[in-house]
Amino acid sequence: MMKYNSISTIFCTVACITAMLHLASCRKFIEIPAPINSITSDQIFVDSVNATAAINGIYINMMNNGFSTGFANSTTTMLAGLSADEMDNAANTANYKEFFANNITGTNTSNLTFWNNIYTYLYEANACIEGAEASTTLTSSLKNRIVGEAKFLRAFYHFYLMNLYGSAPLVLTTDYTVTSKLPRADRSAMEMQILADLNEAQQLLNGDRSAITKNRVNRFAVTAMLARVNLYQQQWAAAETAATAVITANFRLEPILNNVFLTNNQEQIWQMTPVAPGLETTEGQIFIPAAPTLVPAFVITPALNSAYENGDQRKTSWLRSVTIGANTYTYPFKYKLIRDNNTSPREAYSVLRLAEQYLIRAEARVQQGNLSGAAADLNVVRNRAGLANTTASGPSEILAAIQRERRVELACEWGHRWMDLKRTQTADAVLGTKPNWKATATLFPIPNAQIILNPFLTQNPGY
Image (cartoon, rainbow, N blue to C red; front, side, top):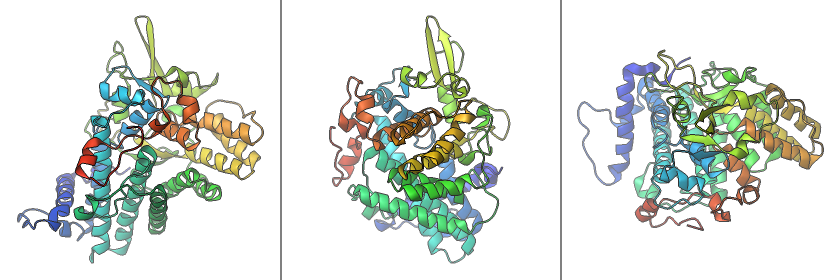
């Protein structure tokens, strides 16, 4: 499979392009002649090599940023997992303990870097959209490909901003004179823009009938994300239609659970390739103790550990325990590798996979009265885990069974549990036993540093 760094001969060009894309935002204030040996932002989208490098550069940056500085590369899983009832930080790091205690301060540096990185990626996505759309030399197919990917990414970033912070500035331009003064958009405006970007991305990428490249956004990734967004917006028919389009495509649940997160397996819709030489995924590096005598930095909560039914093979395949002294620590083990001497990593970072689509369709079907169809979808996921068919009957029982299944199937993945508790309005009931829990804790605070920089930003209630 092609990797982002398969264009290693122009890796330095990617770095240069990324830097120039950032510098372009300053042009409204000052004009600086470009050095004679640099690539200006106008030149980036003149030829296919540099234009492709620009969009690939976003993926590379997302995977280069580690858990302490990133958004996409494990940080969402970690911070949202701590905030819900999935994980605890056994290392007792102050920043992370604030998330676990649902008592995040406005000066929390992890929250600040998380916010800043999302907006960095938003800037890069907008720069690719503007540059490709303005180009007069790129082929229409390449232009569609770049703009389609970038619009998907813009929707993806806004989706997480909306679900983690409640509402946030809606950034649709690289013009700093505009973006530096943006207030928080209404949630309805964010929802409309996310759907608009995804629908346009789908149109642009549907014409690309080349082989699916799973380590970049493809037309099925867009459809899968549409299924999720429509589920969150309670557009049940649209969610079912999108999920069905993915389920009936050329994807299959991986029968061996230990293979689900391997590179380019049949279940993955979109996964990102590690780019650090000799290293596998960041989640493997931070969740797996470096030695069997070390306490894991992040451990599974007793609540999640007990959520698995007897005989659920996901508990033995996707969790691992280590006993040190009198204590046993259980940690996430979906990604099983830390280092790999191979030039091609054996694991890739899963963003969208087929199991979620079955659970989306199951929930959408219940809401439309198709209980047998919902149970059938639920059973596909259960059976793969070695479990018998569900015994749930009636809408409320089947919905509860679907949420239990989402909890164990999507555990420690991209904040699914945290956002499920909020969208189903069960966060207070489930997390109310936490000592510092309050209803306003369902949203992260806007970083104080950003409010100081932009007086049009307002803080979330409770902070």
